[in-house]
Length: 243
Ligand SMILES: Nc1ncnc2c1ncn2[C@@H]1O[C@H](COP(=O)(O)OP(=O)(O)OP(=O)(O)O)[C@@H](O)[C@H]1O
Image 1 (cartoon, rainbow, N blue to C red):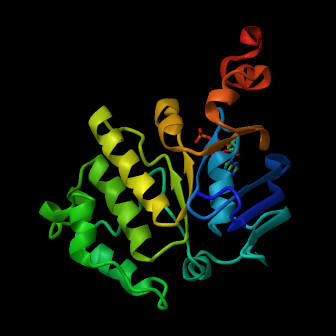
Image 2: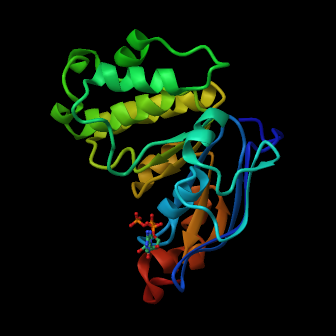
């Protein structure tokens, strides 16, 4: 990442309410092309809601989501895919009765028309799905389902990729491999926002993190610095541990 790059995404004072509850309460951050930004915070702090708003699943109730200078808050997910925004889900959502190959074919056909698509063979190979290419997605194990979810997103040629707990449930060898894949994607210029609870993984792959609590950012910077900030320690460990 070049720190001088213009942001691809600006999230400015975004609010998302469910009834009277503020899941996002004035959240602001930005991400630049080629950057891996971590969104971390305790359970319920609003990380997935932020991903859901940016990817068009929810319309914000306030504030602005701006991509390439255009306000995209509330834009439908399929339109955002064509602008280059795509995501993975905490619980992957492939077409279970379609084969792995068919799932990827759908995504390839749906992706940004102006950008040359990656080949099926490369996607299957790079994400270790070649052996199961002709099996229904329902047959895949957890890691394979997650990789299929990632490949479906990549097949649409995103410029902004949102990864929601992609690494959860993976063993250390798989984590290393996934970390290298994500870093390679960022090096190709994709801006990546990663939501994870695995702090070692986050430290290894991110350039910066936003620490969230109660729908707001309470820290922005390196994770190694974040873990020394009393307010961050307090939200992760509880008040009695704060220094
Ligand atoms: N559709 C919804 N309806 C009502 N409340 C919701 C909805 N989605 C999220 N919330 C609430 O908003 C808050 C933030 O949820 P969110 O899933 O964004 O947190 P999170 O930081 O991703 O948590 P986790 O780390 O456990 O995944 C939680 O209190 C959650 O219960």
